[in-house]
Structures are given as C-alpha cells and as structure tokens.
Length: 166
Ligand code: FES
Ligand code: FES
Image (cartoon, rainbow, N blue to C red; front, top):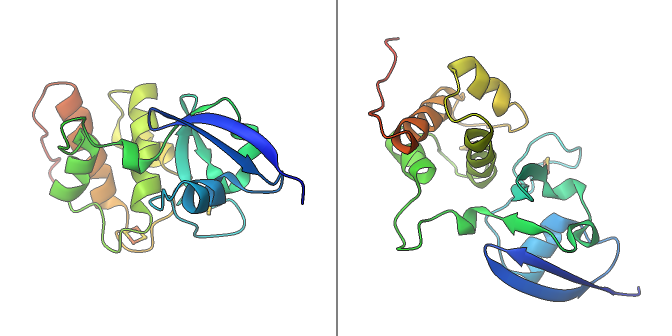
C-alpha cells in the first residue's frame, strides 16, 4: 500500500517516517518508534491502555491513525521521567501507593493522570475516578490508583499526601 510521510514530535524529539494511511498510531508508536510502553488491551476503544498525550489532550492511540498525528506533539510514558532520570511525581506515586500490579494498564493510566492533573491540579476522589473512567484496570480495583494520583497531586502542589481514613 502507498505510504505517506508523517512528521511529529514524540517525547521532545522530532521523528519523520513513512506510514500506510491505515496504520494506527499505537502501532506506529510501538512498531516504528519502539515505544512499547503504550499497550493494546482491546479493539473497541474502551480500555485506555494505549493512552498517550497528544497536543495536551489524552488520546487513545488505537483510535487514531498515525497520519492524523502528523505535526502533533506527543508524549508517551517513556517521556515521563524527569530529565535527570528520576521518576516523575506520578510514577513515584504509583510505586509508593501500589497503584499497579501487572503493569499493563499503567502506561495509559499514568499518561491519563498526567493530563488530568494539568486539567485539574487539585482533583477530588470523585473527580479522579471520573477522570480515569476511560482507563480500565484488571488488577488493582482502582483504589490505589486513586491514591497514587492524590500522592502525585500533593507532591506537585508542594504539600504532603495525607491518606484519607478508610
Ligand atoms: S487499546 Fe483499548 S482503548 Fe486503545
Ligand atoms: S495493573 Fe494490571 S491491569 Fe492495571
């Protein structure tokens, strides 16, 4: 099939490739750029394991063609760590609060949470749960993911995370 040129910025680096028009963005990221953090958990756009940030929005990269990301600025979980290699507040929060088990949903969860905290730096528990409603997790039961996001929000706001009494 005929290939078309695409150019985009991914995790701060400019990339240029030729892609088939039908190539999904998730496959482009994983197979052409070797960014295999974003995962594929479904074929119906529900699970959010493929979530990345594109032009400041959370997008499910299984539901976009790579060609639609032409010219876009993308961030994947591989772009999340701090420049000195330390973990971002969210990555640290997921570890500290045990917000992952198998880790398959985690890259998408972290990318969604990253954008969520830009949209709403001080979310309530309900706002976090609603804010990650597009991301499914088979392992955690979500409770510790909520805490991980609260941990990161507190850290980014310069306060200490206080776990709510259960
Ligand atoms: S792979 Fe499930 S929403 Fe993208
Ligand atoms: S940690 Fe396994 S699916 Fe979320």
